[in-house]
Image 1 (cartoon, rainbow, N blue to C red):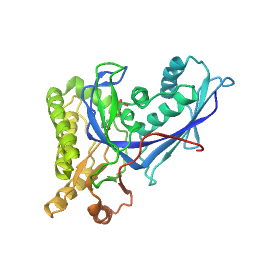
Image 2 (cartoon, rainbow, N blue to C red):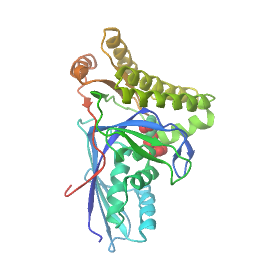
Image 3 (tube, rainbow, N blue to C red):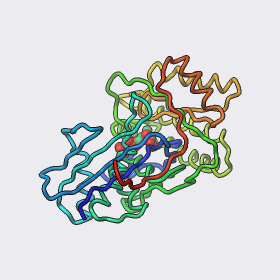
Image 4 (tube, rainbow, N blue to C red):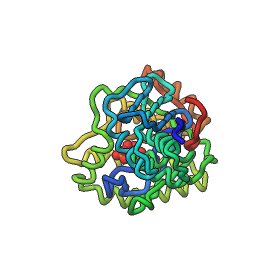
Length: 325
Ligand code: DP6
């Protein structure tokens, strides 16, 4: 059954961050993490295995990609499990609301896991899809599910996977992505977390504090307590970034505009608007707020930053199969 299979997966933003591996080859994390899947950033991926191909072929956003080593390594896992040795044609399109992009390995490997496993004749359940997506990129394990999701770190390949916490969030939460230009080459999250684990003297403290932060966020979700969720998410993100500042060689993801947005969030808060922020391995700031405040925050920020790369996202769905790309 070597017909093309198409899957769609949405990206996710961690409120409790994954930052460090206990096993680099298998991508087993040092701590559990917790995310929200977004509704308007997603990847559609089509995979077809075929006897007539002489190598894996990757087309990303209608462009042929020369180096598909990471995709081939991932597809090797699928081929091994399915017992096939055909190469594949992979076509992938990132759907993002603005021109500034923000491609995500989370949606990419989650969609690839679903499409490639099915195209290879496997019929994986959500748990096994999450385990497979994890091998491509850790954060991809969480994009299998919609809404609030927890990646249980586990100890080995079979028990490290994500689970759904609340697929349709009760909270009226919105994440506002403020997309800032990244002018120079950044340190990838893969490299950055490795350096943090190896050299930051604060790494043990990170593990301890993150375990308790995660409990607090789960509690906030179940009690529908937005302020508790926002406070803990903001604090957890800053503690992650403290690991980059305390590593050697030290590095940072903040840019001048990053600090501007952070200060804006704090002044909104001083003026009685409940909002918080989080940040990943780049200069973008993601504001955590309630739906009722999201349009005010967006328009106020776009004036001060003179930017139209500000996107409001609600909770999105988990991975699904499509009929056409
Ligand atoms: C800061 O999942 O991109 O976004 O497993 O090495 O591919 P690899 O890393 P990746 O790291 C994500 C880091 C983060 C936090 C998070 O999403 O939890």
